[in-house]
Every structure is written in C-alpha cells, then in structure tokens.
Length: 125
Image 1 (cartoon, rainbow, N blue to C red):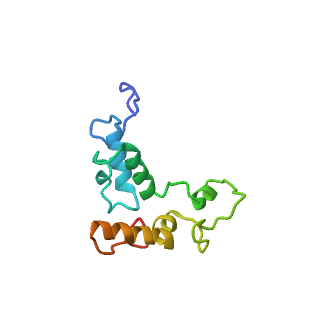
Image 2 (cartoon, helix red, strand yellow):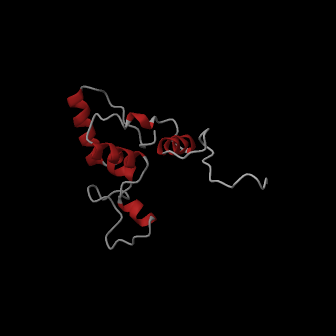
Image 3 (tube, rainbow, N blue to C red):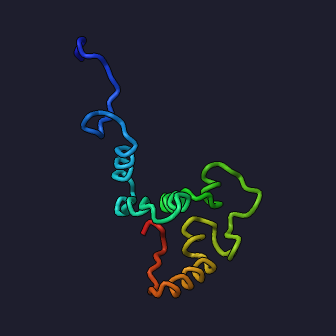
C-alpha cells in the first residue's frame, strides 16, 4: 500500500472505476444462472413500463406467488396449492405455464397469433 496514494472506492467492473447502473446490470446478467436469455429484449419500449417490469420479475422468479411468499418468510393462512386447479403448489412456472387453466389460455393466444405450441415447462427455458 502506498502512503502517497489516497484510498478510494472503485467499481472494478468498469474500466474507469465508476459505478453505473448499466455496468451493474451487465454484471448481474453475466453472473445470472439464466445468462442465455437476452434481457435487452424486455426493455424495448414496445409495451408499457409496468408490463416490462412484470416480465422482468416473471423471468427472475420474483412474482409474488404463494411459493415465493413462503420462501420470504410469510406464513400464509391459506393453502399453498394453486387456486385455479388445486392440483399443484402455486409457483411461477405452475401459475404461468403448467396449470391447466393457464395452458388453455396460452393455447387460445397461440391460436389467435397463429403460432404452434412452443411452451416449455419452465420460464427459464
């Protein structure tokens, strides 16, 4: 350590050492377990910001479904089962992909958009 050089905080993920939200987001995406997804696709301004934010939360598994609430320490007085089908625990993947009710909705949307079935068993896929 050199006594003539003052100590400073430096963001090591930027060449100039300055923190930016952009560099933080880039670093977060690089370290993500779901790094194959291009998160820039969400932030295109094609739909309202609240929809973009919801999509981002959905892909990160941060939508407050019963399984997530339990993980954060909430002890619900109600069942953790899906309120639509009551056949599985309410998780992000179940509620938005695997539940028979959501599956019917996705099939209807795909029919309107004239696309074939392309739904995976997980939002991360």
